[in-house]
Amino acid sequence: VVLAGLGCPNGCDFCCTSHFFKRRHIRLLPSGRDIYAVVERYLELDPGISLVVLDEDFLLNKRRAMEFRECVLRGGKALSIFAFASIRAISQYTVEEILEMGIDGLWIGYEGTRSGFAKQRGRPPEELFRDLREHGISILASMIVGMPYQDEEVVRRELDGLLDLEPDLSQFLIYGPIPGTPLFDRVVEQGLLR
Image (cartoon, rainbow, N blue to C red):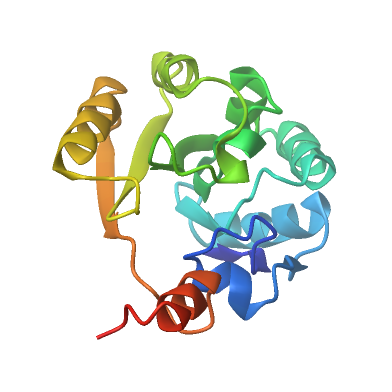
């Protein structure tokens, strides 16, 4: 695990990671060079290692990610990296650039079709998932169940839509109020917490 950053600027109302750090992203490894230096140390220990870059939305800061890409290209070593990234962040890159970073797996928050989170803006999910898949990048897609607009029929439709995207793995989360999040405050304010 390469712990590159804490927190997230996206500010989704359910996300304790975002709100624990007051919607700030704290770069523990500020530059792409810093991230690559950690990768190099791991490669010395195990040249065939698979890595996870732990950073809520690793590709959001394009300058840092592209600097990391340049280091990977100069290093000339094949990498296998799994990273967390939003549709908005991924949409800034070509799939070739993502592959050149050594990224062969992505966790993507699909969430729900009408959830309205800013991190979902960018390329249409159908196009993005297909493009990633056709280039050999595995996808773990996350869906949230229990949003106010969802009833049983909507959940089934959204699940069908997620499965039509053909992710390699799927994660399902309950839209739950975690203390410290705007969702928690809203649920308490409306007297909905039992």
